[in-house]
Length: 296
Figure (cartoon, one colour):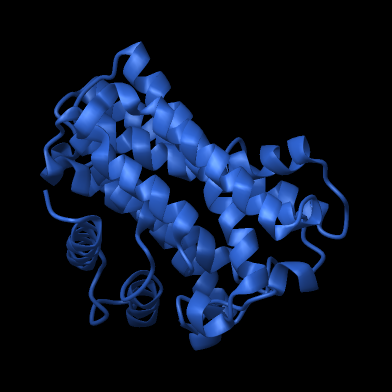
C-alpha cells in the first residue's frame, strides 16, 4: 500500500481532473459565470471530503469510478458553501485557498450565482447513472446529500453560527452548531462513498456515522486552534478572523492545550468506530490522524 501522502496527492489529482471535466468550460455562455465556477472550484483545497469518500469506498470495496461521482458532488457542495460564506453578508472574507475570494475576483452577484450553480451541479452529478449500481441506493444518496446541505445540515449550522456571533455558547451548543455546519457534509462524504458500493447494513452504517461525527468535530477543533496559532500564508485564508468577529469557537471554552487534547480524544473514538473494518479502513484512519495533526 502506498503511503498516505502519496495516496492523498493521487486522490487530489484524480478529483481535480474529474471536477475539471464536469465544470462547463469558460468559452460557453455565460462565460463569466462559468469562468468563476472554475476559479472557485479548481486549483486548491485539501480535498478532505473527496478523500473521505474514496477512503470509505475502499473500506466496503466500492468501485473508485463510482466513488468519483460521490466525491465530486460533496466537493461541489463544499465549494458552493465557501463561496457564499465568504460574501460580505456572511463572513466577509477576501482570501480563500490562498487567492482572492470569488466575490473579490469577480463581483458579489457572480459569486452568489456561482454558489447556486455549483449546488445544482452537485445533484446533477450524483444523479448520473454511473454514480450508483442500484436506483434505490442512488435515491438514498441524493436524499442524504440534500439533507446534509440544507436547513437541518450545513445551511442550518451556518444560520446558528451567524446568530451566535458575539454571544457565548456552552460546549453542547457549540457542538450542535458544528455537527450541522461542518459535520453534516463530512458525514455525507463518508456515507456517499460507502453507498457507491451498494446498500449498507446497520452495523457498517453505524460505525461510519460514529467515525464521521468524531472527525467532523475534531476538524473544527483543529480549525479553531489553527485560526489562533497559524499565519494567513500557511492557512490560505485570513488568520484570526473568528476572534476578531466575536465568533463562538472551542478556544472560547478551553485553552489550546485542552483543545488539542480533546481533538485527540475524538481521534481515538473515531479509530475505535472503524476498528471492525480492519485494514480496509486504513485510509479512513490516516485521514483522521491527518485532520488532528495537520498544520493548515
